[in-house]
Structures are given as C-alpha cells and as structure tokens.
Length: 133
Image (cartoon, rainbow, N blue to C red):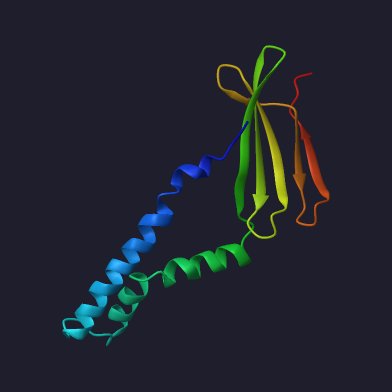
C-alpha cells in the first residue's frame, strides 16, 4: 500500500483560489472607491503579494532553478517480522526518481538497506549501503 503524505493538503486547492477570488474582489472595490492606489513602490509590492502572482513566480523559479525534490510515495511493509519503510523522492521537473531510501523500525526509524541516488537522466549516481555488517 503506497501512502502519499501530501494528499492531506488537498484542501489548499479549494481555499487558495477562493481566498484569491475574494481578495481580488475586495482589492478591486478598494481601487474603484479610490481608497488605495498603485502609486509608490510599497503599494506596488503589496499589490503583487496580495495576488497569486507572487506564488506563481516563486514556483516557477523553484522548479527551473533549484534541485528541489518531492516525495513521490511512502510505503511500509513487514518482512521477516521486521517493519520497513520505503521513501521515493523525485525531481520537481521531469518526474524522474531522485533517490530511494529504506528504513527499518527499531526504537526509531533507522537507515537500512542500500539507498540509490539517480541523476536527472535516470542513471545511477551513487549507492550507499546502510546494512549492518
């Protein structure tokens, strides 16, 4: 069974657009009533950050200019009376696997097995052996 830890944030898809629509309407009314204006650098900065443009700009730069990673999936399973966890990370652009991590449950989740790191083209970058010898 694969568990996506980010699925609990699905409410963001509903609340952020609703917030932006409501705040856009309020911002439009404030402009129309001439309560605020877009003169001055401070006002322009505040208007920029009160719209989704700031988030979209940030996400664009993060996706294109960083090596950010996302958890693709986490799964837990039992093997020989031991509990294991496997985490798969992917690059933010291209959907290529970045690394696979394995943990074993002791007093806490401890690094276990062989961790595999991949380049963006899918070739193996390195392997680290965490098995106890």
